[in-house]
Picture 1 (cartoon, rainbow, N blue to C red):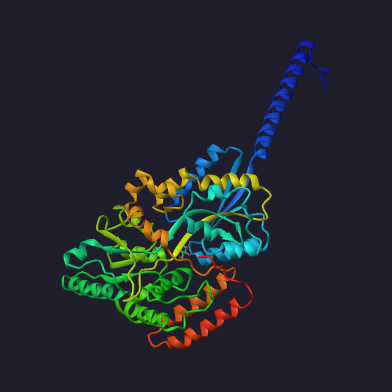
Picture 2 (picture 1 turned 90 degrees about the horizontal axis):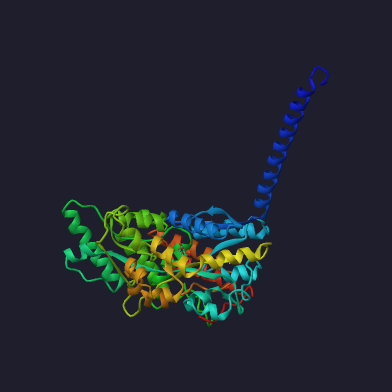
Length: 446
Ligand code: GLC
């Protein structure tokens, strides 16, 4: 083949081939090195809901990957609604899916996730002296039969938001009872109407989903009623305080001061109405303070007041305990990396970022003394007492089934003005009793 070449030509040809060969070898080696590097990276599958303020989560995950270059987070974003997110996540866990290592957990899920064997017990990683740094109710919510299954990320408690400017304008005090709230709302709405301003009295969460249970529980408890007594397991929804409270919501809230649209509202829609300046009163979790005071998003920035939720005469204010935890799948093969991620997410530093960026209330006690957080979120200091005393939903592994009965009952009872509340309540109460009699005991500790 080289017969036509001089010996010089042959040498050139030989050198060129050698060069090409070396070049290919170098490219091959660097490819291998790169592959090795990415092989070394652990990919963690993190299942989370659709956040209100996504930028904060992008920042947090970016920070984590920078500080832990050996771990890559693959995020799967589920629906915003707790109920819909529960369905998606539990489907994966039932299938022992490899696509879940770390997940967010609503405060009502740990007993279910623990007894189903989906969430890994974290006692060896999250010992009592670390747990003590968190608000007690949030630790209790994550504890089932003496073991801990999640690390609290933020706490939620129901609060009343109101239009400070309008209450002042018409000389009203902040209402203490639900009746005063309805009266105040009616007067302000009709006065504003005379001035050509269309505004509703109230916005809250009344769609058939988990949020409905939270809102209705606050009405019922504040009338000295109860859902399931944690000590006796007696179901209280067919008792008169609960019936009266549900009737009040049907007739005075849905059929009175709120737009009928609230029957389809979850948190985002109900908050949207408020920040457009279209509601005098609004029930929501602590994050709504930040959004409603952000002039880029809200027409009522600086005009918002915050208070404990009202109660019925003879009762007291109750606030539902909400909030989210971080759990690790019992089926993960990456426990060590998963724990590093959980520890990072629930650290003081990240909880502070979430408090400042998204207005969520921290679960770490120390952050309630942080001047920067309190400056950005004065509602945390003002409402700390409410956070500390918020009331848990029934603590049972069967909670999703109990909640499903409650959601259907409440929704039927409040959306039809001629509903037979007593009959519906009795039916639902019996269904819940049957569920609870399935033999799983409620945790008696509150
Ligand atoms: C909030 C609460 C959660 C509750 C949900 C209902 O996300 O933190 O506990 O179940 O709202 O919509």
